[in-house]
Image: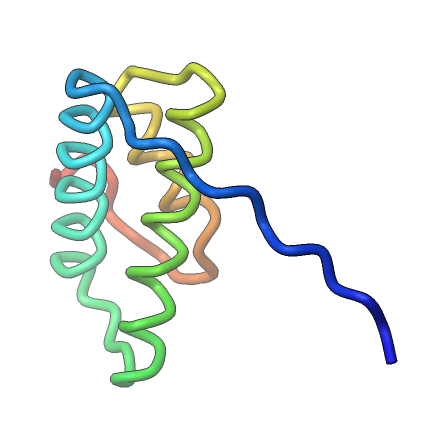
Length: 86
Protein backbone atom coordinates (compact mmCIF):
# COMPACT_ATOMS: atom_id res chain seq x y z
CA UNK A 1 0.00 0.00 0.00
CA UNK A 2 1.33 3.43 -0.93
CA UNK A 3 1.93 6.05 1.72
CA UNK A 4 0.11 9.28 1.02
CA UNK A 5 1.32 12.63 2.19
CA UNK A 6 -1.45 14.95 3.32
CA UNK A 7 -1.68 18.25 1.51
CA UNK A 8 -0.53 21.24 3.52
CA UNK A 9 -3.36 23.38 4.88
CA UNK A 10 -4.36 26.21 2.56
CA UNK A 11 -3.89 29.72 3.77
CA UNK A 12 -6.74 32.18 3.23
CA UNK A 13 -6.39 34.52 0.28
CA UNK A 14 -5.79 38.22 0.83
CA UNK A 15 -8.97 40.24 0.10
CA UNK A 16 -7.68 41.75 -3.17
CA UNK A 17 -6.56 38.31 -4.38
CA UNK A 18 -9.90 36.81 -3.40
CA UNK A 19 -11.64 39.55 -5.40
CA UNK A 20 -9.55 38.75 -8.48
CA UNK A 21 -10.19 35.02 -8.07
CA UNK A 22 -13.93 35.58 -7.76
CA UNK A 23 -14.08 37.90 -10.76
CA UNK A 24 -11.99 35.55 -12.90
CA UNK A 25 -14.09 32.54 -11.93
CA UNK A 26 -17.34 34.37 -12.68
CA UNK A 27 -16.00 35.52 -16.06
CA UNK A 28 -14.73 32.03 -16.92
CA UNK A 29 -18.00 30.40 -15.95
CA UNK A 30 -20.03 32.96 -17.92
CA UNK A 31 -17.82 32.37 -20.94
CA UNK A 32 -18.26 28.62 -20.68
CA UNK A 33 -22.03 28.89 -20.21
CA UNK A 34 -22.45 31.21 -23.20
CA UNK A 35 -20.21 29.12 -25.47
CA UNK A 36 -23.08 26.85 -26.45
CA UNK A 37 -21.15 23.83 -25.23
CA UNK A 38 -23.49 21.28 -23.65
CA UNK A 39 -22.07 19.60 -20.57
CA UNK A 40 -23.46 16.73 -18.55
CA UNK A 41 -24.06 17.24 -14.84
CA UNK A 42 -20.74 15.51 -14.09
CA UNK A 43 -18.87 17.54 -16.71
CA UNK A 44 -20.37 20.73 -15.27
CA UNK A 45 -19.20 19.82 -11.78
CA UNK A 46 -15.76 18.84 -13.06
CA UNK A 47 -15.43 22.06 -15.07
CA UNK A 48 -16.31 24.25 -12.09
CA UNK A 49 -13.78 22.44 -9.91
CA UNK A 50 -11.08 22.67 -12.60
CA UNK A 51 -11.71 26.38 -13.19
CA UNK A 52 -11.52 27.11 -9.48
CA UNK A 53 -8.38 25.08 -8.91
CA UNK A 54 -6.51 26.63 -11.82
CA UNK A 55 -7.53 30.19 -10.93
CA UNK A 56 -6.59 29.81 -7.27
CA UNK A 57 -3.29 28.14 -8.15
CA UNK A 58 -2.39 30.92 -10.59
CA UNK A 59 -3.42 33.61 -8.11
CA UNK A 60 -1.35 32.00 -5.35
CA UNK A 61 1.65 32.01 -7.70
CA UNK A 62 1.29 35.75 -8.32
CA UNK A 63 -1.09 36.26 -11.25
CA UNK A 64 -3.60 39.04 -10.50
CA UNK A 65 -4.95 39.98 -13.93
CA UNK A 66 -8.52 38.64 -14.10
CA UNK A 67 -8.47 38.30 -17.90
CA UNK A 68 -5.31 36.19 -17.83
CA UNK A 69 -6.67 34.15 -14.92
CA UNK A 70 -9.91 33.55 -16.84
CA UNK A 71 -8.19 32.69 -20.11
CA UNK A 72 -5.67 30.31 -18.58
CA UNK A 73 -8.39 28.56 -16.58
CA UNK A 74 -10.54 28.16 -19.70
CA UNK A 75 -7.53 26.86 -21.62
CA UNK A 76 -7.17 24.12 -19.02
CA UNK A 77 -10.58 22.74 -20.00
CA UNK A 78 -11.07 20.45 -22.95
CA UNK A 79 -14.10 22.30 -24.31
CA UNK A 80 -14.41 25.18 -26.79
CA UNK A 81 -15.34 28.56 -25.32
CA UNK A 82 -15.95 32.10 -26.48
CA UNK A 83 -13.50 33.93 -24.20
CA UNK A 84 -14.36 37.33 -25.61
CA UNK A 85 -17.98 37.14 -24.41
CA UNK A 86 -17.19 37.44 -20.71
